[in-house]
Length: 311
Image (cartoon, rainbow, N blue to C red; front, side):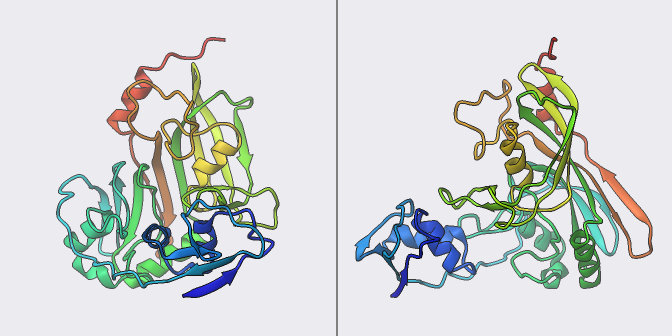
């Protein structure tokens, strides 16, 4: 059992966040599972993940290696995944909300990756992470819309470099709670892991902490209590759009993770209103290619039931 002394910088944070920072190679869900099992102690006493730490306390942690994730091909998604475009090098898919992109210990199958391995077995060897074969970017589970997947290593490297150089254009439609004071804006706030909840991110109070993130937004339509925005992220941080919009008082409607429990969502909206509507990138030949995805029916229906803002 390893012992770790709590530093001044870590004081005030949660136990689960503290352990995750010391073992970044393991998933948050696995760390939390071990804590619930009783593998973590603070000054000799078993503690839960939400325990706040103080300076000079000693955290004892009995680390166990997680079981290997089995990347089994899975046909259970059937025809839920729409193929927008496909050639010998890549495919562009339209992902529905409610489907995770990659498997985890809590969700070992029924993901985009499992679907890919069933329909495209050679993709297993594509990429630089065996848990994410072929994937050069991701969407949150509750976000729908366009994703590009590489079918061979050469294309994977090309697309990955396109994302790294910020040459890929991605646009989203988001319905947010509230009425922005201007018709467009720019959010340039670093994103850090939340100290109170390791499953969330938040904006950093300083420019020296966290990862740089840049998001542009503009108003498309205003409704009573809500606004439809077009979002163009220039970086691809986890939960970036959701965190950035919340930071300016415009949380995404239906976002159970980042919306206040007191927030009112549009009637009959049963999911988060965030959709990857546009994707554009350059092929190795130099040709620029772009794709569009219409709003899913459930989001269209939610908009139709909203009254327009009356000034």
